[in-house]
Each structure stands twice: as C-alpha cells, then as structure tokens.
Length: 123
Image 1 (cartoon, rainbow, N blue to C red):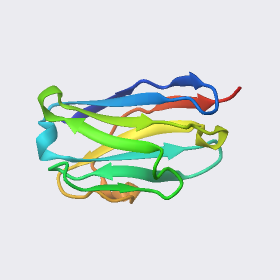
Image 2: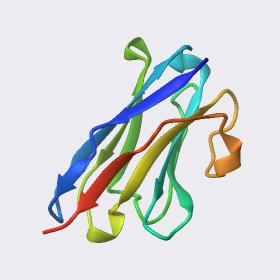
Image 3: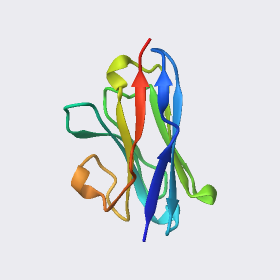
Image 4: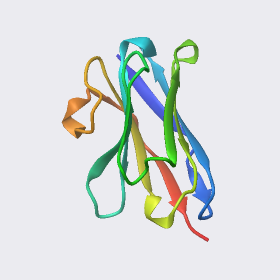
C-alpha cells in the first residue's frame, strides 16, 4: 500500500520561505506523478503544483508561479515543494498526492494522499 507523509510545515513571516517534503513508501516514486494541494480554512482543496512521473513536466497555479518550485529525488523516494516569498494568503493545510498516471490539479485524479501539513504565514 502506497503511503505519503508530508513534513516541513510551520509558521513563517511574510516574505519567508519553507520547504515541504513528501516521503513515499510502499512504492517507487519513479512510478508516480505527484501533485501538491492546499486547503485554506473554509475553502475547498486546490491544486497548486504538480510534477509528472518522469519529472520532466511541471504545472503551477498562477497564484504560486514564480514563487513555488516542485521537484523530486527518486533515490530518496521524496518529492519537494520549495515555497519562497510566502504571503498570508498562502496559509493553508498543504497536501501531497500521488497517482500512477494523472498529474493535473483535479482532486479526484489522485489515488494516494498524505495527511497534510499546516503552513501559516503571519507576522
């Protein structure tokens, strides 16, 4: 059974940076595409970044483009989301998700999900 565990969330001031990790077990990362989602209080879950199985294709939501970078290290079975220039409106629970084929922003496109990690951007 594939399991995903996010880490790296926390409290950061506006303009600061955080790096989230998504460790995958029960399967090889090289066999999965990874999506990153966030859910702010009272809002739905939205896709913000994704990376294809090969790592050759990435997508970003416009609101994070140029600030967030998705990457992966197959040797460590870990995907990453580097977040720079964070804003208060980035405050949310961040989730990673994996699927053997899909790498877009549809929540129902992914078979496997992590438990989420809280990111709070506040002065």
